[in-house]
Image (cartoon, rainbow, N blue to C red; front, side, top):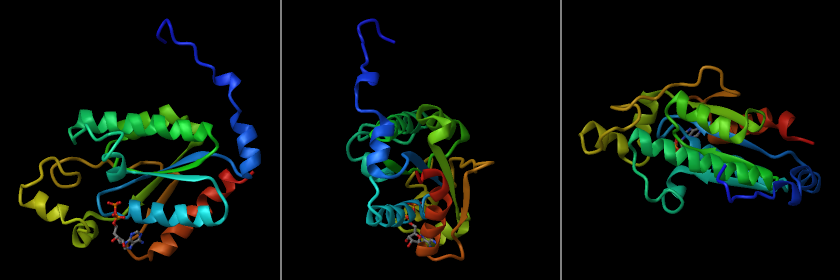
Length: 198
Ligand code: ADP
């Protein structure tokens, strides 16, 4: 740690005090998957459900953070890593503030996700694999990005000419292909309930 930095973590209102007031535990639900797999859609539905139940919930989403906090970063492996580092540090601050943080990011490699988990802390990190086959994501092509990547207009697109490494042991393996958004969101809420209830 830098010589002249003197953190005051122990003097702030503590996380457990905040959790008791909020009526739930804090934690990070990390949604990973291909572009178009459904991360943003599911995260928004889960956020709405938890918010309606009175939870302190925050959603950090790929394109949103790239308009501000990470607006200076591109999509090289190095920039993707820095993107995820900043997001994980931000999520950690929100956890200390007692929030349930939903993070929806492609986060394509095991190395990148394990860095996020190390920053947040394994006990507070719930990895959700939004497990949608590439063909389905490409057929959905919500943002028209797969067509551009196939045409060579976008280089280094995850799943096309940049790798996606599926999680080997996610907290939740969410298969969206034959499911409605509501059912997928309900599955996430049910899975985290046991861990994030007081
Ligand atoms: P990502 O954030 O992973 O890039 P998006 O959420 O932007 O993906 O897009 C996913 C698309 O797939 C949306 O148009 C959504 O309506 C559709 N979709 C169909 N079924 C599901 C499901 N079960 N879960 C999530 N999205 C689904």
